[in-house]
Image 1 (cartoon, rainbow, N blue to C red):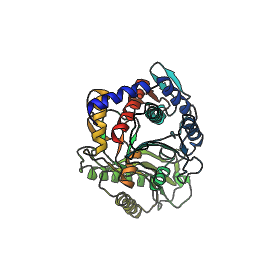
Image 2: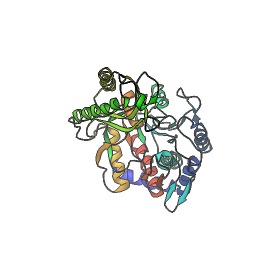
Image 3: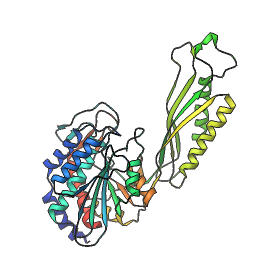
Image 4: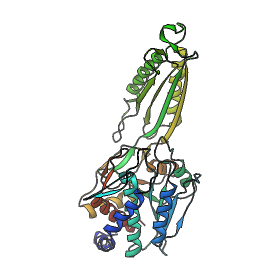
Length: 392
């Protein structure tokens, strides 16, 4: 599609854009609490919004029947490619904050992560329907639960992908707008419990032949530091190095009780091309060696959140994205890393589907102070609609 044709397309897309409707959609989604694992009510709300807009809506459960996903498709009569808009409706487990419009911002739980982005995708779908600018192919919009770790593990989306709920390429409106991410690390969370066999006792009555779980915990911190230093020598020019991170360490009930347990919790991240199974096996082998050396029992909960991510910079989706982004914003978007794991990692690792993460300017993710920029929501909605006309 030539630039003059794209420019004319953008004019017609702009004419169909409705700022008030976009804001209302975001507010209607944000006002429904949806902690991970319990996003059924907001999924119902989104399904009703799309149904009222004249879209045919399906509700695949993705092996999570308590909160069925939402799937809506807008198709033309002409053959072509299918572009997917995809996002999650669940939010982290923090106190609920109702939506509020403050000048050019919408605030509230999930405003940035990522109900504001989903509202952009909904508006783009409406605009394509109303403007008549989608002349070939189709657009599939999907939204789901079980995204946010550690309460979710991505399995609902994984099931949807395996069941065929996927397009030829995907746009994901997570709050990342300063780079076009082409590389990202995989991620797992871990929780380690170090245990001794005896009962809790006063520290002066402790059996001298029983190991100290705190000393074993300190040794684990040391060994994980050594692991982090060793793996940090491998560097990906885009997304950096693998890492192991400790975010919490706890032991004991009071200051002079000999504790029975010490637990630590953190993350492990790896580069594209590495095997998540190998990463987990390496971590567990380190724990087994420590348990043997210190005479303690060690248990580990390991949760793989997402595999690593790669996007071919020469993929047609990237080319189309950059041409449309240039038209909408006046300049191309720099290529860069994806700092977090998201649904794009699953689309690439499970189905080799190219995915671009790009959403509105936003902040406060995983806090009680989420916000999203309304002007940038408009930009993303018009960008998504324009890309669809080009790609499909």
